[in-house]
Each structure stands twice: as structure tokens, then as C-alpha cells.
Length: 216
Image 1 (cartoon, rainbow, N blue to C red):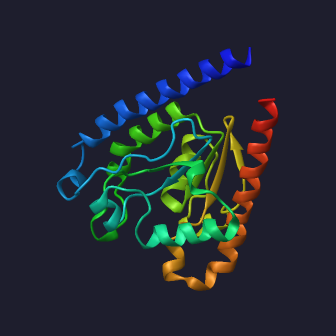
Image 2 (cartoon, rainbow, N blue to C red):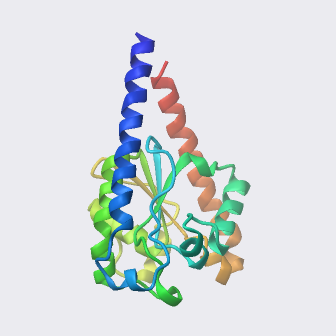
């Protein structure tokens, strides 16, 4: 019985991976908005299609756009350090962005750019079906909370109160966290940010424990 289960599970994972690969080809061909004129690459999500945890950031930075890889620039190095300090394994996540193309001069996204690109994120969520969605920063957090009808606060300045608090809405667990880029501008927030990422580590451990016990 276990061999049959493992075989079926492996087939499902392979089908999921192929679906992600097919979908990524659609993402890379996108020319829907003005960002297609200034990008070097469209940055698709990275990670295993059977990942239980989805991490959503805003958009690629300069180095990510140039090398077509997630979180390899200054923000990525801060994120890796936060993960190291809190015992989080980066490979636990499928990582993606709300906006798939770099925003010129790191400007804020325009609403029509988010609207054009959000279909791709919605589809990624539908394919991955994560147990937990971790959102980094204001824009990613706001979009996901609105998508799952979690009533985010209207003011950007009030979002800090949500970071580090688990939200459960429409059968989806969501954990908004500060974007690692915030520490590049405000290093004094490091201790507070680490505490919030420690909550993520505890939550990942708890979910993985439940999943492992259900497999036996």
C-alpha cells in the first residue's frame, strides 16, 4: 500500500512540476504592460512544485533582473542572513514575486502593473496549493490579504502591526513579514525583524511536524 501511495504521490509531483514549467513559459512571453520594455528578464518563481510554503515578494531587483534568479541582490543577502539567524531553510519555499519584472529605479508599482501581473501569482497559488503563504512587505502582503478577504488596514503605515501575526482566512494561512530590504535602510530594526522571522521558523516547524505525523 505504501509503495502505491509513494508512486501516486511521485506522479502528482511530476505533473505539478510540468504544469509549473508550462506556465512559466507563458510568464516569460508576457508583454502586457510597460515593464516589458525595460526588463532584461521576466523572473519566474523558483523552487519545488510540491513545496508546502510559498514566499511572495514584490518584484525582482537589479541583480535578479540581470541574472534571472530570485533574491541574489542586497535584499537576498539580508534574507539569507535572517534565515541563517533563525534556522530557516531557504529550500523549504517556492519563491515568487507579485510583479515579475523589475521596477525601473526601484520605483513603486503602478496599480495597472499589479493588475496585469497578479493573474500569474494567482495561478501559481492554484498550482502549488501552499499550506502557508509568507508575504514580504506592503504590496505583496496587501495583495494576498485582499485576495483572501482578510481585510488589510487601509493605510500603509499601519501594516507594521500585521507583520509577524498569522492570519487565517478562506482556509489559507498567511504570515506577513517585513521585507528584508527594510533593514538596508533601517538597520536599527534588525532585532525586531529577527523576532518576527523566528515566528516564521516556529510556524514552519509546527506545520512540518503535522505533515510528517500524517504520513506515518
